[in-house]
Every structure is written in C-alpha cells, then in structure tokens.
Image 1 (cartoon, helix red, strand yellow):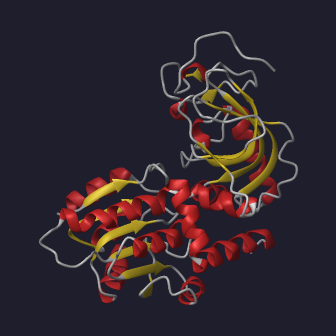
Image 2 (cartoon, rainbow, N blue to C red; image 1 turned 120 degrees about the vertical axis):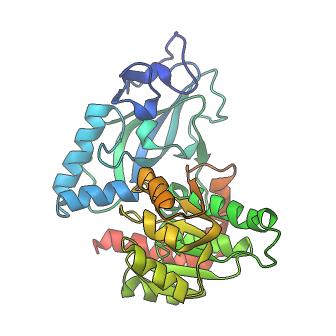
Length: 360
C-alpha cells in the first residue's frame, strides 16, 4: 500500500483529524487509512480484546444483547477511527500480524511477526473490514478483519508459541497490573524501614484476570498476608480452590463501610490495596481499607480519580494513590512468566475464557 512521503510524529499527532493539537488518545477521530508514514507499522488485525470496563458498560446498556453490542462497537470504530468507548473512555488491545513496516520504524518488527499491541485501542488507528460478522457480541474477545497502525512510540510484543492466542491476549491485556503490584510491594519495606515486616496486600476484584495475577505477583514480591475481596460466593469458591490468597472475603466494593469492615476483619487494614474491579464507585472503600501511610493502586478504568482524590481528602486519609497506567518495563514478559509458573492463575484464566465462550 506504500509509505507516505511526509513528516510524522512518533506519538501519532499526524493521525489526529479532530480536534487538532491533542494527542491520539484524546482525539475524537483518527486517520485510519492503511498507507503508513516512514516510522509506522501496519498490522493485519485478527482479534480485538475489549477492556473489561468498556465491555461491561456496553453489555449493561444493551441488556446483554450481542447484536446490539456488536453494532455499537462497529459504530464506534467506524466513526472514530479507533475503538474508544465514549462512556468509559477506554478501549482494549489487539492481536494481529505485521503487514508492512516503515523504513524508519524503531519497533524492531518484521512483516509476518504475530504480535499483541501493548498500547490502548483508544489511541490506535483502526479500521475493520468485515463488519465484525464473526463476533457474537457476548465476550470481550472480538475476532475480526482489518488493519491497525502503530506509531514510532507504540509498544508491541510477539505472541508466545507455547500459549493459545486467546490465553496470551487475555494475559497481555492486563499485564501492567501484576508488574506494578510487584514493584509497589517490593519497594514497600524500603520506604517504611520502621516496619519490620513485609506488607499485607488486599486485592479488590481478586478473582478476575488482573486480580488473580496481582495476587500471584504480590506473593512473589514477598507480601506477608494476602486478602482477596470478591463480590459473590461463586468467585470465592473459584479462589478458594487455588490457594492464591490467605483470606477471602465477600464484600461489595461499592459499599465503603462494608468493604472496610470485611478487610479489617480479615487482618487489615492493608498496607497495599490493589483495585482491579470494572465497576464505578469503589474508590472510598479502597481508601478506608488501607492503613495510614499505605498505598492504593487503581487499575480499574471505571475509577473516578476525582472521587478518589476528594474522598481521601474528606476522610483525612494519609495514603499514596497510584494510577496504574498499564505500562511497566518488561510487564508482558513478567505476566506471561507468572501464568506459566503459577498453574493456579492459569486455571482461573482458562475457566474465565471457557465461561465467555459458553456465554455464562
């Protein structure tokens, strides 16, 4: 399809159609044409993975109607030149095969490489050409055809040969969570020399993909006590069979006092609280579940950072709050290593993927 002979930006400013002057993630519409600039890469898309918050919002809006969900996702991609849910502000990631590489691309990719993009679909120029006809709208993973564009500063990883595509994609979609959890837990003792013991960790939404990986990462990083918070008995039973957590509590993360009470009764407050749920309204409970001078890590795209900041102020809570931005150097390799060496985590992923396929 050729290379465009024109200046480009490594962060993709040349692909922003409106409004001009903003970064691709903040844009309403991107240029999704297949021709590439010299530092770009075009990927032949095989599968999208919608992020959990976005898919939940769409499923709730349409009452689980797969046809309606599919139609809205297609409308978003067509109108915006990217998958950027206007309600949640989130997108997901994709798997595909490298089709063409510009002569100035710094990504080290070659045509034929099978990759997963490790940057959000909210900033990735995307065009689908099959109308999403092979997707029933009932799972986060979307088989499709089309192309996507990577910029000079995009991130991608080659898919491993020893894992099924669906499994690898599910892991890479949340790989920032375990990597940052490990960093925070590992550095806690250095930041708090007055505490002789390693930190206790609470993971909210612990039976999910990012939650289960974060439990395993916290344990590997030396956490003292792991408290898993789940909303229903089915998820408690799922985790109980794995032994990933020391304590498992049932609590609605949207009920601040109930969440605090449950975590405290299980051995809290936690020194580190990791929020991995995909529903809004969990900020205040996470803060109350965390000890003074502790850390809250928000990985959910449903998080209101205004509510978190003002809530901590109103509660006079001396906690550090971190935004999980999805990128930590080496995050994909770290998450895949956890999956390979933690069969308990792999079991959770496989069960969740099987449930998506069966529509449960």
